[in-house]
Image 1 (tube, rainbow, N blue to C red):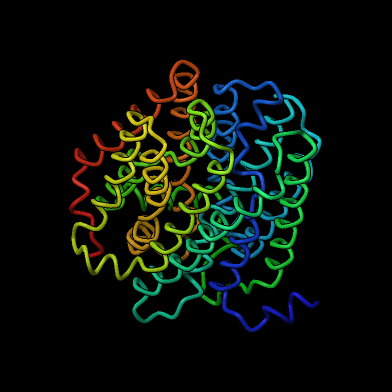
Image 2 (cartoon, rainbow, N blue to C red):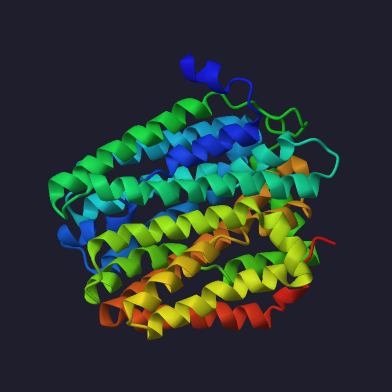
Length: 396
């Protein structure tokens, strides 16, 4: 009741920002790979955990998107956060590869429920006037909350995980489970948008058909889909592989968390001011924000000096999600409201399939050479950014 009284007067954007913050306040994120390695996992197995998550998202994207259009956006978000919280509590007892895989499947289902439904919830809650710019601001706020969590959590997590030992890891996991549970309680206060959309009368197969038809019949939406898939930044691969890379170079443990925190702070500032950045860079905004991750991957692959590697990593991490508010606005502007969650889920499904497959490739390469894995990722991003002519990406 106290939570409801505290946030009851807020709009859905503010509530979703709070939910995003606490559901991403991972006290152990900066040492997650190192923790899994202490449980005996190789880098291929570590990467495969994320591949399992994304593979599960791929399998569940369309069904959960249809569910969101049928039962409502709010219920889908609530289910997603509940599944995430459950996974974190179960993570306390995971001590082998199979356990991590099973929890990853649960996490993938939760992500699938959230994917599409959260954007549709925000978009359909906004006033109708100047909706594109309102969406950019709204997703900038939500994205900023995500990055703020990633800024603060490693610093606090560095205090919690004072030593790289199991007891300290488990303490951080416990605090993370509590944080995500708090996000779940806030999600219960969300309001279903008043925008009229069909979610009970239509046959699910017809809704799926309409989502496919909307993508296939819209040339610009198909191009945006290609951009979203082929120029994805593989931020989870960066997060997974930088930890052992820093350890290989004997960079002090303090910097493993500190660079993630600083990168999160810069990312927060970028997303918070994304409209100002777009006005400053003009028509080249999306191109710059797409090329920057690829370039920083290449630099990380070739640099071993910590005084250079640390600031480059900060720029790399900050740039991973910088373009997302713009991409969200571009694709939502091309969709009909009544099946928005289904269509977004279809698009996210293909992104996740690509990420799942390539994460396995990068993990196998990383077991051989982490710098080579970074170089391959950077090369792919730059190649497809140029081939797809991302410089033409604009709302109008």
